[in-house]
Image 1 (cartoon, rainbow, N blue to C red):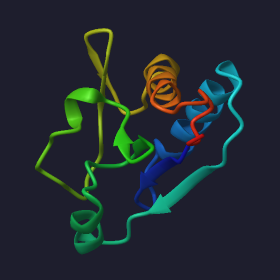
Image 2: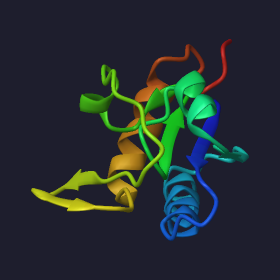
Image 3: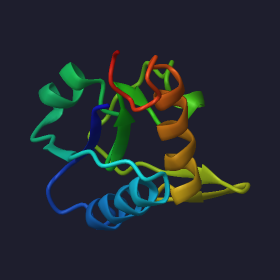
Image 4: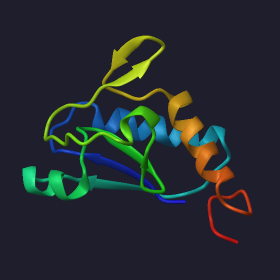
Length: 114
């Protein structure tokens, strides 16, 4: 399972999001490295399909299902919908759902191909 947090330097929500991801991993009893990817400029944002800082992906898929088909990329702040409100930090529950989805898509249930 590949877990990425994409961010731009100076984003105040970057580290809190990494902590949320670690909490979700712990809650799901998953031990994987969280790869932090600094998006340095607009061209890199375009190349990565960056939806804003911070963005969390599990196995290349955004944790927010509704954002997966987004065509607009940007070099700005990201918000997540959490219980009918917007937040700059994804909830542990949203991250956990993405981890479970990714784990369920692999034959051995551990996020790695069998």
